[in-house]
Length: 377
Image (cartoon, rainbow, N blue to C red; front, side, top):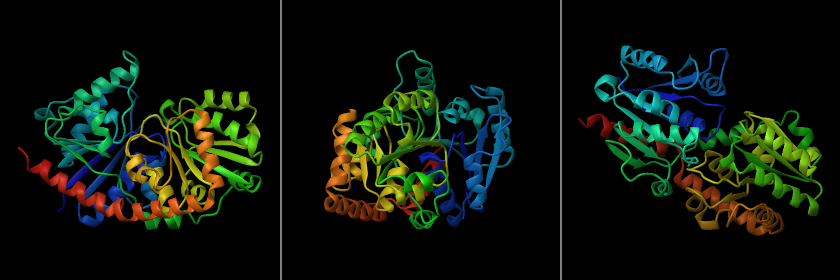
């Protein structure tokens, strides 16, 4: 029997952390482990995107519906369920379960716990998010180990994160599966939108402050003056939707911006888009970046987190010196104008992702880390 691993996540879509988890669980099944995804959500939600994707791929998943927030009563039920089902390791993917289960001392938890930190948002001091961030770090300190998805995260986080081991394991991608998924036809409203625009810029991620989509919209407004037949698609959902929609109206670009919410057709959209633009204020190692690289979609991205390393300091895509709208607009224009150079960078990026960011390599490093953690008293 393989190691029984309970992956804990409360997700709002199928973004980077969720896609990384899907790839990891696929590989762990091949390795002979017994992984399970526990997907938390509020009562009344029928099926979350991560649950639908897991079922489609035949991966083990357990939906768990609960009241939102610091629900300690429900976290105790989850812990007792995990103990009763004989799990050897708890693996958290996000601050919710870091806090809900990581806050228990290990003598009560009785199951070793680790966390993968997919990114880190530095919230304003004394804000609600800042309190969660403080609880998160306290909880991680009680775990057996922590995984960072990139070396750059070491500069943003305390040197001593957990009571055990801290390691860097880059995210990995099931490249052949992604390439196959990219061949799917575009349904509506995407087909009409792409047909009606000469080229389309793509943004993907949660509609939250750190993704910089407000700056992308302002940059697109400038770009459209020189290229009136350009379009922008922003795929994702989140708390900033109303503000971003208001900005679209204010900039007068409503006919050329599509914000469809969360959708599962990102690989096909990447294949049809002229460039992926990521004006993020903070990142770990974005899966969407690796997806674009594996499909040879040109990339324009902030020089944050692991992005400069993955893009070979600009050899594999355009790196933004800052995230001001004028800078973003100029970088997109350069990528469009210098087609031969852009194509060479996309080829280099493709080679990089194939050599260094496969799901097999990622899963092998996680298995080694699991064995280290479980062997530690």
